[in-house]
Image (cartoon, rainbow, N blue to C red; front, side, top):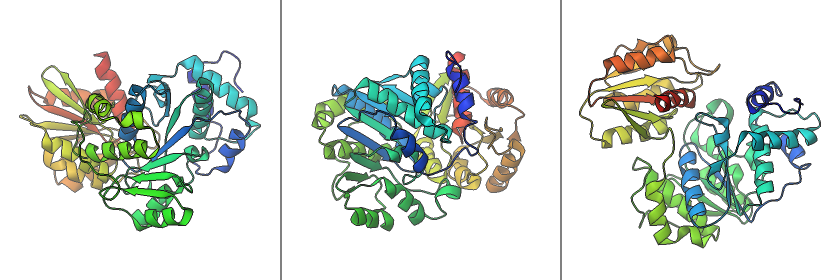
Length: 407
């Protein structure tokens, strides 16, 4: 354990050393430690899974529940800029001291169990939420569902936004296999909302097997009556409808009052998801799309926006991502590509990323030696009314957003 008074940054650095693998799916370790923590659980634990749209769904659910006067804790990942973003209570992110205190509480009962960075953070969030005596916890699944650390906390209801190909090295190489992993959040008797129109067979089979109450779009709920949404993209209507179905099925009627919904959802925003920032006559569009389905959704945003000038795309991706599948939907809207190595040890080197993008798009792709170089290249190329798109990874969008906020 770190010495008393250690900073949050020191804790986070130390947590990275506790387990030999960054990702190690499984529930035994976290359940072991969770059982030794005196956790007071609320009436409602909402578990939100899915390939894409989890963050948007969490943001909308959180906003509606807070507006309804409920005390809400949210655990989400990854963060855009600061780790604190992962844990919030009542709409406010947890402070450094609060998180460190929760880490200390986990360490006091860990008894040598080797926890991953994500597992430790999940337990810390549970400690913070328990001490705050909340009405609702919203937990965003990190990866998959069945073996994800958040699934160690028994949900009272769940949402699976959609299923697409991503994290294939851990979850499987086809939709049905990945869907079966995500379906692991289901429990007997609890409502489980599925947000997409195409429902994998393994989702239906798992619901029938465990006796979960599966709610499907256009059968159990529709997109009718939704207000204008603050989050960009036509696909967000499906996320909003699924969130409302989840809250309604959970019996949290105050959060789905039509007047409240109409006043709240148009004002929901989420950093790094179709986020627009104006600087010196140029529009910056930041989106963390890192798989083909997310890229298709981003292409929907690009295609629906009136754009007078050219679009320069700054791209950085991790080495396990489908580069060709991501850049394909975006290429018709991009005038020039700039590749940079994202800020992760798992990042695909800029030169290799550029080679693959050039081959996929059949045109040259610039290589930046650093993020600063990439930003300078994009700024020099951009003229008035042009757009600079930043996409491909949280590890790229976060640092760019931080620089834009500081400028």
